[in-house]
Length: 309
Image (tube, rainbow, N blue to C red; front, side, top):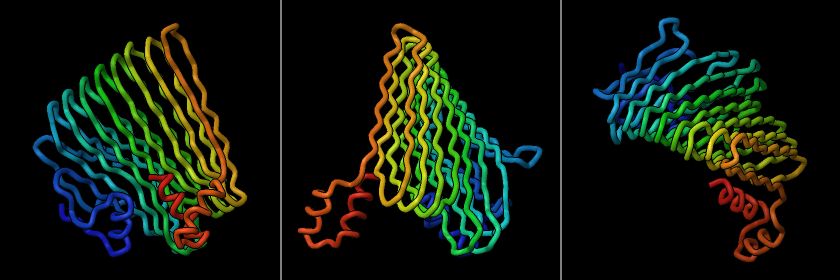
């Protein structure tokens, strides 16, 4: 199906999926609650759910070096939608999945997208998942994104998750749950920035159920102006396993940050570690960059950009 997007929607696609043209491979583009384009391959099938609430993405066992893009864009003020997408990643496959949502709201009504993504990662499969959220528009209506991500990992599987929200989202509740079997490996890298009066909640609950399973959950965030963030991460060791969670945050202006890392060990051989650090930008860092010709504001931006990379 040929992709049909207007100029605003194309700009949003560039922001959340780094796409300047139609990608190769499988894709499903959604715009203002409607299908805007779809392509499948011999190894990756995309099927609409019968009730119209989302899609099933089925990746055949042994699929290598393929990708699937499923971006969502909203440019209609007042639109609220909930979408359920299920990913079935076959055994011994190695794929990249790019999702994300962009909202451009120039109206007075709130625009909201709530996405529920479930991943069933087959034995010895590898997956990289990239999810970016972005907001724009000068309307009084809010841009609201509430993603729920569930990951179920079979023996020997691995998943790398890149969760990014840098600009323009007024309110977000990001809930991620994962269950790992024997020798499964999960890596999460969250990058988050809030500004204005924005609110962001990030919740992670990772259950290490199989011997040799590992998880590494790291969040880097910046809270500016009067924005508020809460990071709540719990790693649960139910078997001989290793887990690590970390929150590293920069606080600016009148921002507020609450970090709640927690561990639960239910096995004597569960090795679990958590770390949390919140602080302001060091004055000597700004002074050093200003001696190189940058203004104070430029120096701050340079430090923040490097921190969130």
